[in-house]
Amino acid sequence: MNPTPRDDHLKRGSKVAPYEALIAGTVSGGVARGITAPLDTIKIRLQLQSKFFKHGRPVYSLVKDLLQHEGVIALWKGNVPAEMLYIIYGGVQFTSYSMLNANLSLLEKNLNIVKLSSSTHSLIAGVGAGVASTLATYPFDLLRTRLVANTKKDLLGMTATARGIIKADGPGGLFVGMAPAMLAIAPTTGLMFWSYELAREFSTNFGHVPFLEGICGFVAGTFSKGITFPLDTLRKRCQIYPIVHGKRYTRASHVFFNIIEKEGILGLYRGYGISILKTAPTSAISLWTFEIVITSMRKYQNAKPLTK
Image (tube, rainbow, N blue to C red; front, side, top):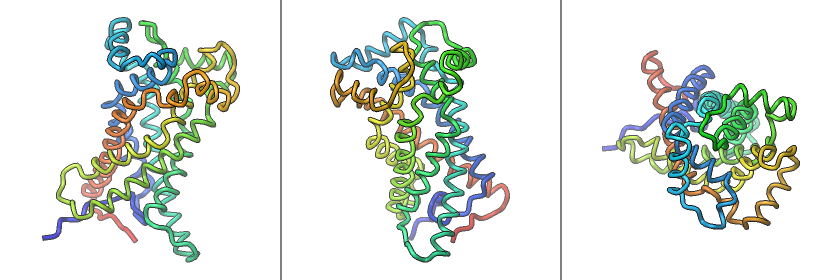
């Protein structure tokens, strides 16, 4: 007996209305962030505290110090801008992906010149979605990093932090590190959707497996972050450059070579382990939630998904 096919609303040619993608994307972003927030805080701290790298400071030591000096609530530092970031990012990411997916399919059909594989199609649409979502949410990403970087017990306010950045560096200060962020997030998003579709194609005969979409998302998150992690570290270092060095951010290349010179190539992988522990479940929860919300909405509306 063949297993019942599972809906894949992200595959090539899937018809997902923008409002469906927006609702499902915002829900998936909020749920994923709410569950994995503490891991994100630990990951960012590891990426930022370069002075401990050569001494091999273990994760448990950082967590112990954080809890002792800043309290349990510190694990949720920067959660307000981060939650806003994930909600907006999820909405923009899945909406733009669904629109690019549909239009790219239409373009392939009309031109009839290039025939892309399903996974390559997802890679291109995913990169475009990564660019769109980064442009829409970058200031929140910067604010999250600045708030998490604060090692004092007193929590900083998002509004006050934003005002301080604008006062010191102008409105452009909210976009410090945008170039490495784009280089990090766009390919990561593209690779995530690419590997997710490969995993979904491979899992065709496992439709009976619970949380199948989440398992495929877990694989996708692990693979994509593993490939692009050094760019993520560079992005975080660029975001805190002004407060660490007391001067305006210069160039990503300067920050990159500074890491290599002082910490070696492994400095780019600071926090890699905890990042995978955070990114993989985040991708799993996000993609699973998106698929489930779309399916639930359509069941509620008594509508069937249309695919080419």
